[in-house]
Picture 1: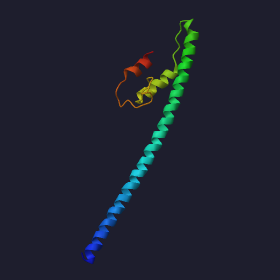
Picture 2: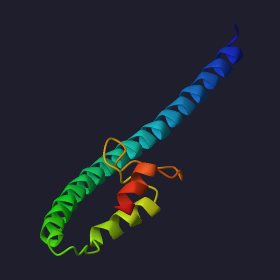
Picture 3: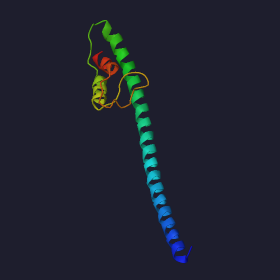
Picture 4: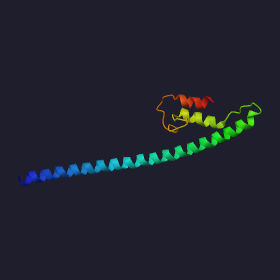
Length: 115
């Protein structure tokens, strides 16, 4: 192997290493962004679960008070749940709560809204 071939191979190798480094940096940045989004969604999900629990407790208390009067008061929390459902999130109880519906209707969520 002469000097020119050696120099060309080294230059090519350097370009490949530089490209790999750039790719690695892009992938690292993307991974950081995905982790940050995931953490934000987990926090939002926990907040929504707490809000839903509070809403259910308040609804149960209202229903107990209104049961004797046979009056059913509209719940502002239902409006919030309906808004979340329209935005594409599950509002049904269980492990699906807060996850994306990807445009598909969910009978359990619709049941929550109809109650």
